[in-house]
Amino acid sequence: MGAVNSVARPTVLVVDFGAQYAQLIARRVREASVYSEIVSHRISVDEVQRRAPAAIILSGGPKSVHVDGAPLLDPRIYELGIPMLGICYGCQLIAQQLGGVVARGSTGEYGRTVLSRDGESNLLSEFPDVFDVWMSHFDAVSAAPSGFRVTARTPEAPVAAMEDGKRKIWAVQFHPEVVHTSNGQRLLERFLVDLAGIEPKWTTASVRDSQVAAIKSQIGTQRAICGLSGGVDSAVAAALVHRAIGANLTCVYVDTGLMRKNESDQVVETFKRNLGIELLHVDAADEFFDKLAGVTEPEQKRKVIGETFVRIFERHTGGITDATFLVQGTLYPDVIESGGRDGASTIKSHHNVGGLPDDMTLQLCEPLRDLFKDEVRALGSALGLPDEIVWRQPFPGPGLGVRIIGEVTRDKVRILQDADAIVREEIRAAGLERDIWQAFAVLADIRSVGVMGDERTYARPIIIRAVTSDDAMTADWARLPHELLARMSTRIVNEVDGVNRVAYDITSKPPGTIEWE
Image (cartoon, rainbow, N blue to C red; front, side, top):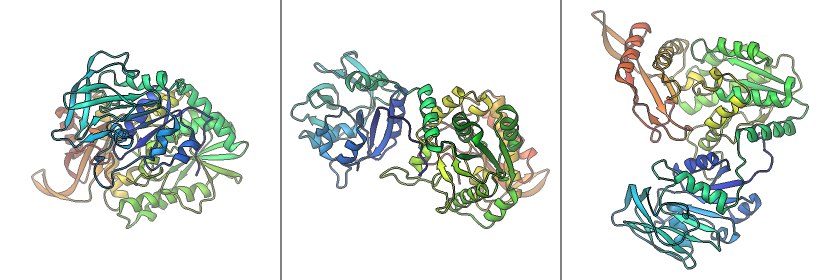
């Protein structure tokens, strides 16, 4: 529901076999200026034919092809003549399903490995005879299927690359999508452009123009309202829709009481005075706090906040009784994490994907639904948005409600706003704002004993969370300087009433998520 369909474009289907590799491959394909989408390995041959992709890439995965329940691909897909590249598990699956042999590993091969080319190869023809690749496998192809020629090997993988030009199938045991593989991006481009014959036209300008056309087609002369959350996604979505339908868009900024410190004033100032977009400012903090009273379960909090958002949009349209569309800044990772693609599991319900009520009266327009975060930032710049919006750190739609563990109250929000402001101020002062994907404070639902001014305290801890990432699908905890952490801790304890302890989260994603909730 609500997706804006862009004009026809060549699409690469990245088949997901159950690991984070699929998301990374999809991003690398887009970096080659080719549009990609992630699909389940359960996709049928009929669905592939209907979608008519320009190429297919089989991703890596955590399972062995030998175990019961190992993910498979409909074998008829191999016969469609669509250019295909198998990577790691995808390489082994091609070998097994087409009559080759996949040997059970005895030692495995992990990390940086030296690959040696072995004979003629269309895929590897431009590469050195020997170069470094990144391996992560236990089993290995020991015999290629009939019709394939082996084109590379490593010490532990006698078939590190193979290909069948007649069937347009290429396969590599290593991971070209990771930065540790020399020439990895060039290898993907070689497959996409030179072998699959795809013209690289997926650019920021093409995205802007095609989405503007698609929005015009979807909304036409009807009216739309856009819910601003204070984050970059909703801001870019609003600017894009405004480019398409002009004055037929009204933005509604709902002040939930869950925003970062002073953020509501900044949002109103930017949109009303700097961008010239009609903006309705609704102060709904009381309603949100009433709805959240007693709610402690994270998924339920998201759903409560999401439904309350929509109900407020339906009531507060500034006299616009003919608004029929609700514009939201849903991104591709939101759709994936919310189980919005075949075979995907739900990690969490994003309020703009899985938290909407079934009986909402507005139709959805989600012009960013196909994009990753870095693509959204580039699009925002192309639309003329200022850096203070485009480079604003990601902020969840439910706001601080998902950074407070347990029940959300006004007092807890006040504590978190003050602590979070200090974290962001210090990150900015240290010149790390562009290097850090997100840096924020979390308020835990516990209290601990402390000593302040020779007196015993019993107050809450603040957890600082700072991560680096490219697209939020995976993230690593940021190695912040100890001096910076010390300044944050000192300021938070001294300046924020109700806090007597500060901790730093050193968990990556996976296994954790970026937000705490």
